[in-house]
Image 1 (cartoon, rainbow, N blue to C red):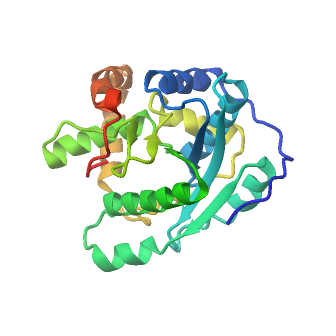
Image 2: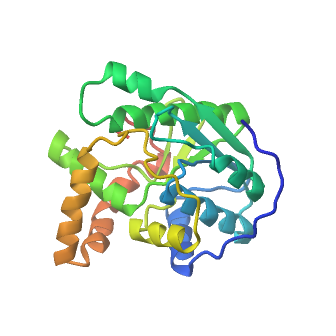
Length: 260
């Protein structure tokens, strides 16, 4: 579903700290090249909506020209209604694609685990890959932030016995698409604050991976929050420690692995 190109909403002011952090991430991990066509995976949560406005600001200010489109995957969960995003993206004047896929039913049918995170995340990403290829985008931008990277690291260590996390920039297995995560240096509390201050149309209960069920990721989030209360420097130190894993294989743009 493609929105009409009509611009009526004013551009939102983006905090300088967020601008600096996303700019540094894009430069450090060589995320966007001249002429790239970038498709943002927009769930409607605070993170992806914040990334939308950061990328719009970057598109306007950066000397590196790139195109920007937006796609939403509707997993057809009873807890998720993406329809409010349609008029919002239309008024922003950005090409918009609403992809409906019954991920919810497949997860309920094929999985018995209490957390569907990995299964549904991969399903949703596959839908975004197909949309990007169909519409001629070669870069897919996702909204995971530093908190997500840290949580993924500890989940991988605790549950799989591996020292791994998500990558900031990689190429998909087929080799035709690159995936970037420009919020890699940003904190979740920063995206939450921006979304609240700018009254973004956040869709709550938006994660098609959990459908209101408790997840391992939520448990890890609570554990890290408890530790950060004791040491406010925690995420600064974690970012430094995780940098080699975030950029693993970047020189050759490593292909995606099963865990990512």
